Length: 268
Image 1 (cartoon, rainbow, N blue to C red):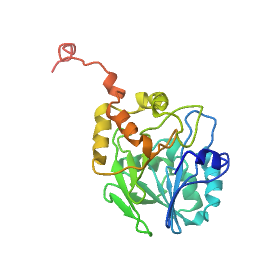
Image 2: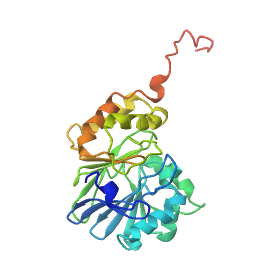
Image 3: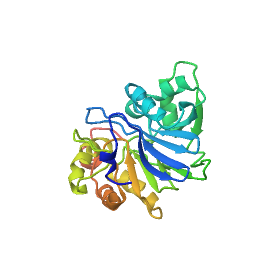
Image 4: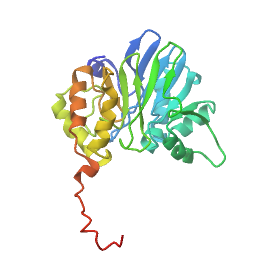
């Protein structure tokens, strides 16, 4: 995968092939909304099976559907992964289930509890529990690992590490907000930090949460980072991305410490 992808495809309508390794392919099927916080939606095509990574909002469903039709029959989409419950990345699960009620929703128990509220009373869906099943082996033999990322930003957030391609679908981690969007990061990483700061300062809980997530990759090689918002980060910038998160001060890191003396008005 290279930055040439930015010029190779018409991002207003094309499904974008990002990685191809045998029968295992990764596509971008997201939205080119003019909003600064636009969604990256990904499709893993493994032989004939399709797995959507973070399906986007209901308003983006038709655009995503049109892109997926360029790749495979929509009936081959069997699973939808939900990193967390927010409507910008999960709302369209309702539309996918209306299209095919047999689709399986992959999520943590915490996220599962919340996304059920998208459904009408009494409606159910097939559920894959990432806590009970921390990995999924696909038909090609490729393995997806579900790596929890609590409070990054949701308490039940889970990322996907594609062991076969060493790709990390990072959810809101390394997300960026910018009107000057490129699918693949071209600029110097230091220039990209400002756009990530806009997101991380307000949404990521703390540096402690970030470091507890990073430790999962002590013995895992990551070739590409694919966040829900902003630009895809290629291998040359992965270490810089890890360093950014390691040193990030965000969320409650900016709260001041309140002493017991200051709270002495509360009777113990």
